[in-house]
Image (cartoon, rainbow, N blue to C red; front, side, top):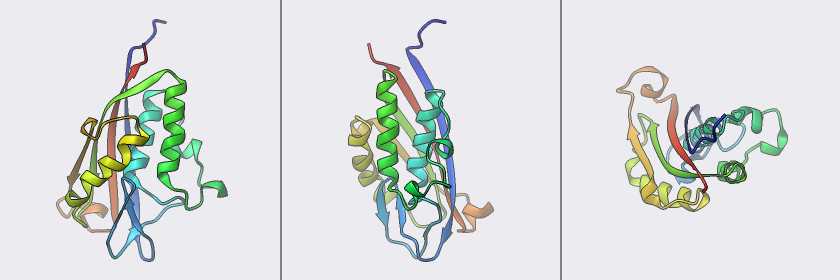
Amino acid sequence: MAEQNYRIGIGYDIHKLAENRELIIGGVQIPYEKGLLGHSDADVLVHAIIDAILGALSMDDIGSLFPDTDDRFKNADSLALLKIVYDKLQAAGYWINNIDTNIIAQEPKMMPYIPQMKETLAPILGLDATDISIKAKTNEQLDAIGEKQAIGAQAVVMLEKIS
């Protein structure tokens, strides 16, 4: 099989909103009355990016790599998990060309935090903040996200073989 110069991956994550949790998205703590429920810090945006990278590399998903049955990942900082995945990407001989993402939340408003998210994620991924697109969407008051019960995220990543 011929060597692939480009690879594309897609990631998705969703977590329930819960009392007594910090809301961390894109590595940024966002003031809100609830946070995301999960084994780690439940950062949906970072988890979607991790799955997009792993998918592009044809590796197992985030749940296989960092299982919620493993206490080492209890309350884990998702940025640390992202760094581990980025190291795997580099070991496979790829770099990230660009990332495109969506955060889907009825509340709180994400736009004020997006520049800080990009600045937080860029150095971990070896990128300039301009290589990361983060868009904020609502679900128009439909389903669990629209009813303010959950927040979701989607990510697409394009990898390029290091020459």
